[in-house]
Picture (cartoon, one colour):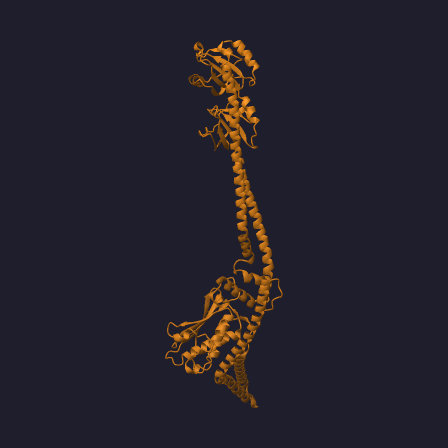
Length: 620
């Protein structure tokens, strides 16, 4: 509120200093401290309306991204389960084949040649090899190079002890061949042939073909690892078969979901499912970045939508603000110039405000004219009080001028005038001229004081104060009342209506003189000084009895007076004059007794200075 009042005071001060200022300059003065522009408030309103929409859109996008992530996870889990089921079927088939062959009649009869012929007639995995070992591990029969390569002794021991088929992990057939895995099936106990084992060695490539035929979701990779975590098969990058990933083995649950790293150390998210036949694990995984991509895309889309909506809000705010502020600006310009607002405007409320402003302006002009007449009447009343004294003041220089003129006539009227007479006559005429000019100055001062005023000019404040005080005390000098001036030198000039400010000085000085009529100590001090904040101050102090407390609170109200027969309008008029000039009039007790009246006036050219309390008061 104070900032707006300060801006109004500066606006009026700029208009008083130069009534012909351009409209752009007036707008800058008027709005430089008047808060945020209307476009900002409309933008805030649009933002308040759009924020819930943006929040809902972001929520929906995040929900969609979360759903997409859940779908990826569900697809990976399903693919892992499906791969584990297919793996179990294939391993169960191979295990059944090994068990059937281990219990065949040819093996029981040690007819290994017939057993080889039997193998060739059976459908079996490509490049699959068979080997039969006795309890000591000696090879009884082998196809191809099945007897060469790694063995899983733990699995062989388990097969003998449990008499159940066992599945090994990845084994090396030979340095030059692909890795294999083995299915170890015990041969039924036949006395001396006890603890024989039939081993079926199957290349792991068979399982790679198996999982590549399964429908793995796009962007995902499937792999199978044995109980040791070694890669048995992989849907892509087959060269990684036989390697062991850096990730830890999954927990013992049948299936699950976890985060880890791939063989290259890159973060991945993966689903797993356990094989019930061999205890192997089927994995389906994808890069963590691809898994997080939907959420990232949603966040980017939310940011893009928010930016678009923010730009739309700014454009709408500017558009509506321009449509609304133009008529308001025209109304403000009309108020600054004192003219009528341009009607009609597109905004009905602005039209109503303009009509109300026009009516208020006309009423203000009428009141201003009435106030001017009242001030003029007050000055005439002051002159009525000073009439006798002023007549004496004018009569003295006129009488002196007449006396000096008669003396000059006498000196020049004799026929035997001497040169010394001529010198005396010139001196007498010079004195007469000075007295006539003095009388003229008194009459001119009275005429100026009685004028209506209205024009503001750059004025020496000290000279104006001295003239006003002298005029006010013209009838008090013979009563022992004379002012003491304490005028600060080098005061900057002020732009004022000389007649009105002189009226204020005359009123304050005469009031002070009236307060000294019954005082034992008669001191009247008229002073000027810098008041700071771009203002100068005039003060009138007296040593009278002071102002009663019950009167002080309403001293500046109209028709309040402490003088017998007083009108009670002098101080009210003085205060209105000072406030119209952008200043402030106030009263305070004098330290030595009596009262001190002070009023301030702004100094032109210091509008950039901090806004004074006087200007704020005037703006209010």
